[in-house]
Image (tube, rainbow, N blue to C red; front, side, top):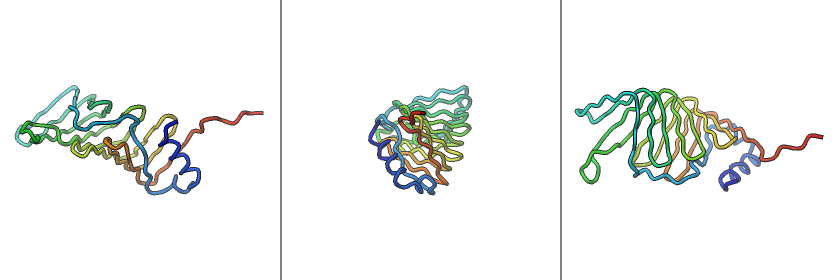
Length: 169
């Protein structure tokens, strides 16, 4: 079991009130993420506006960057000029049954905004984070993919499965 899971389990064991708190710090993404990696997007349809530097991907959208995957029914992409003068993705706004995968962990919500420069994803709307057999739910999840840290807010509820179940007699 990884150190983050032990630390989180110990915190919740000794501070049961934390499981019902308004906000909880969490770890996210067992694997390192590099937000400077290229972004690959697949979808059923693409609508691009050169005038305002946006693109709208619709239908079975899958965004990939390194080990991270973000899926949703629709993803709006904001483009801007990069340091070298080329056009690059600045921000992704996913809606419609959004799921964020990073390693063995997954988070689901109604929408997500991923700002590439900071490596931060903000998910809102009935967010559920699954880490192995453990789960956490709240209204808002803010994850820094580069550092692997996160914060769940909005009447947080946590369910932990013990490593070993007591033997029945």
